[in-house]
Image 1 (cartoon, rainbow, N blue to C red):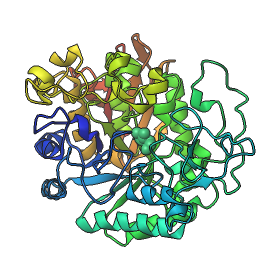
Image 2 (image 1 turned 135 degrees about the horizontal axis):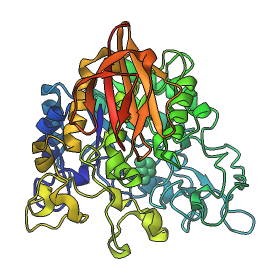
Image 3 (image 1 turned 180 degrees about the vertical axis):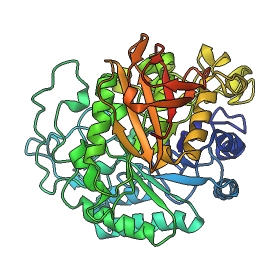
Length: 523
Ligand code: NOJ
C-alpha cells in the first residue's frame, strides 16, 4: 500500500504549527505497524507556498519549514531501514514565478531562458492570446508589463508553465529526477501530467455543450488543446527509460483522464508510467454498489495486458472518502480498496476515518478558495489526528496548527483507535495484513459475481486453488445472499470485526453496511 503524506499536516516536531520531515521520521514505526509499503510525500521543496509547495523555487533542495536536505537523507535512510520506500512529488509542469529561471525569463524577450516558459503576444485587442482558463479561475494568461507579452499558467498566476517543447527544459528536469534518484529516492508521483504539453497553435478550447450554471467553473470549457496533447508519450518513454536506468524505482502519474485516454499512459510496450493514478473512485458522482461495480469492471476491462491496476479513494485535492460516504460506509470502502486487484493508495487519516473539516472563509488558505471558496481544499488538509491531547498530538500544546482540528479528534485518532479492537484503524490494519498474507487477494484474478441483491457488490479473487469471496453490502439495510454454487467457506474478516466463522454460502446474511471477506472451501 502507498500512503500519501501531506507534509504540512503530518507531524510538527519544532512547534511552528507546520509539519516537517523530522516529524514524519518519528512516525515511521506507526506506518510500519499499519502495514504500509511506500510513502509518497507531497512537495517538500523551497517554495513561496502560493500553492503549498506545488510552486517550486528550487527543485533540488528542501524548504526550511520542512527541514534540510540532511533531514531528507536521514528520513530516507530510516525509511529504508524499515524496508519501506519513499516516493517524492515531482512537479514538472510549472515552477514558482519566483524561481530564478522565471526571473530570468521575464527579464527580457532576448533572455536565454525566455523560451523556458510559454509566452505569447496579446490578441489584436490587447487581451489574452486565447480563451484558455486557469484551473484556479480566470484566464490562464497573465500580462507581463515589462516585456509586453502574456505568460501561460494553467494553475495559479504564481505558477508559470514550463515549455516542455524546449530541449533544455527537458534535460534540466530530467537532471532533477536524476538528482533524487541518485540520492536513493524510490520514485516519483508526477504532478499534473496531463497538461505537460499544450497545443502548438494555441487554438481556443471549445465550450462544453453540457455545462450549465452551477457546474464547476473549470468544466465550462473542454480542455481539448491543453490536455493529453500529441507528443506526450515520447516524453513519458524518456522519463521511464531514465527511471529504469536505476533499479526498482517507480513512476506514478497524476492523470485526470477518461479511461480510454488514461490507459495509453502505461505505454504500448508497458514502457511509460508504471501506475497512472486511477481516480475512478475519486471522480464518481454517486456511491452505489451498481456504479462501483461498473467502474471496477470498466477499469479492469480497459487495462492493457500485463498492466498493473491501482485504486485511490482520496487525496489532498478532493473531499475525504469518510465525508463523501459517511462513517459507516467508510469501513466498507476500506475493505473495497484493500481487496481489489491493484496497488491501493491511502491518503493520511483515511485509515482513521478523518473527515473534511468545516472552515470559515476567513481562515481558508488555499489559492483556489480566493475566488471559489466552495472549492477550497483546506478542509481535506487538516492536521493528522494522533491522540486526545491538545492539538491532537500534531504540534506541541500552545502552538497554533496551520489549520484547525475538528472536535471529533477526541474519538478519531491513532491512540484511541489503536486500542479499540473494533475501530476503523484496526480494520484497516487487519485488511492490510490479510491482503499481504493471501496470494488470492494480492495477485489473484478478479471476477464479479452475478445474481446478488441490489445494493450489494460481490467478487471473487482467485489464485490457483485459493479462492476468496468479497461480499459488500452498500444498501443501508440487511441483505441475504444465496450463493449455493459457492459451497461452504469461512468468514475471515467482517467490517464489524465481530465474526470469524464457518458459513454456508447458500444463505449469507449481511448486516447494513457490512462487508465480509470469505475464504472459500475447495470445491
Ligand atoms: C495537482 C496537485 O495535486 C494540486 O494540489 C496542485 O494544486 C496542482 N496539481 C498544481 O500543481
